[in-house]
Length: 266
Image (cartoon, rainbow, N blue to C red; front, side):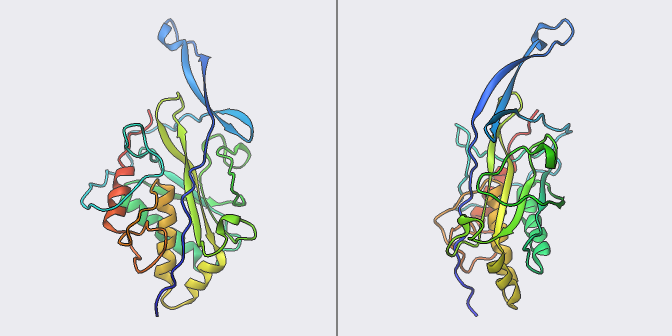
């Protein structure tokens, strides 16, 4: 049986308004420690200090060498054209809202997370369930729910009635915000989200031959979360219309390896 061709949603890069401020931080008699710039982001209309990175002792996993070549693109880039990605010295934490999740959805997400982790050299870590509902505008910091760090990646299930981005034949959407470092230097990804169409994915999982196709859509959306954009090449999983390809193509692997090689935040 032929797999249905379904569009998969464009990774959504969440916009931020960033302002820098100087905080007086006295450090003994060293004048260089008196003032340190601090970046702020706008969260629900108010400025919030960018979270300090958690302590780290280098990369959590070795970088994945680039051994393939093909079409790939990045949702966010630095001025020199290099990709903006998640900090490889810290885990990419994700939570799952199980509301509406079809049977087999938990295993589907875990398998997709393992695929993009292996391809990128980033630790993609499940940290539990959440009651956070998917929304077009997601607060990047949610102290009451997740503490004062960046919100973890949200994986949720919905439909076009509740999330217009899933209208028509869109089976999923995904992306992350490009945010500044705590001192305003550099940019990294944070607070991503994946929303899968519960009815569409459930119907695929109900077919004997549908699990691989559903997993490919989940991998596609998680690749958006890690920073990959669509490409105009049907040989790649990041082609915007799902077709015969059900695993990462050579350009997908090249792109994920590169987003996993960005510098760590000090």
